[in-house]
Length: 167
Image (cartoon, rainbow, N blue to C red):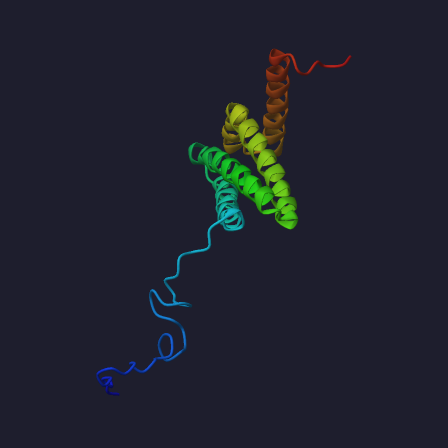
């Protein structure tokens, strides 16, 4: 296809915006390189996506063995920050549906955080149970490990002052 040159004093021929698919090129209306939409609604969507990915990372990190499962706390903390910012943006954008979903997600993130902290606090007790069960060959030995674990947990809770044996 050859380019036509306009005669002096005449207007050059107009081309359709963009390429063969009708989309505008870079810098043209409808082009692929238009500036992204900005504002509270766009920020809420972007931060909601970040919140979701961080929360997913926290849940996946929980499946890792002990030292690495602690990284879930970092993911959860990041998810709570991103979720709070997304919630603020959703309030500014007046997106009620997004508010409900983000609020539910933040509650879930708080539960995940509490579960992660509890798992880290009782880790030495669970580690002792795991070691005991690894060496227990018989059912009687496994039951003894379970009983010892319950006693250790009860003693630990009593030391904290949170649980008293009834009797």
